[in-house]
Length: 279
View 1 (cartoon, rainbow, N blue to C red):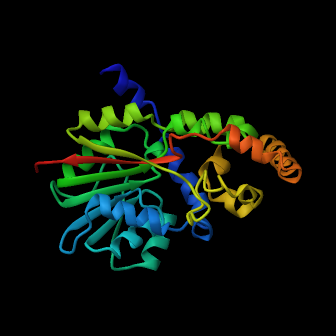
View 2: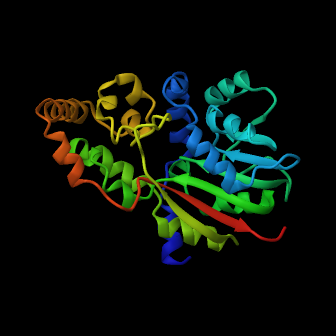
């Protein structure tokens, strides 16, 4: 196996670790995690939503984005390994077909879908090749749209100042842009485009760096509880020290200098569009 694929296979956490984590945070997930309208609209545009076509949301969680995408057209399906999250998805929309499944063993026949999406989830896959190969198998032809963050971007999160160990572990789990590209290409996809996404204070989905311009968000334990990095990678000691330092910098207005120091033109997250041209 090429070195790039070896590194790609090392990213993510095991299914046994991932499922309990999301079963645990799944009960309160919808309190702060909801589909951001701008992100949903862009994913819908990139995947090519259209009536009469079938689309799949891999690792859909509580189905927030699946439901938002379905509003743009098409017949939508969602898979996730967390029964707790899927139960909420089913309760919110029974018209979408929800199935319990890991990303590396999708319960669909070959060439079943015209498009596939995966939002903020590839860093939880034990490796990338198997899930991407499964997406290729179930996709007739069309786009595979991934919304993710790259380690190169996360190194410029100002969260690194206050929660360095949490961010170090979080960055280590995140597949690099190179590993994502190589893994996609190795399974037959062509890379159409990679577009940066910049967090603004209009963002409605409170994921990891959603508080980029609203640092007070991280002082709220409800917000932190539904962010996997805080829920699983941050020790109580680091959390206390980081929150104390953040509060102090906000009170003294030193935070503005910290945020400026970590600003980057590379974007905070990215849309990756890969295409399967032939079924």
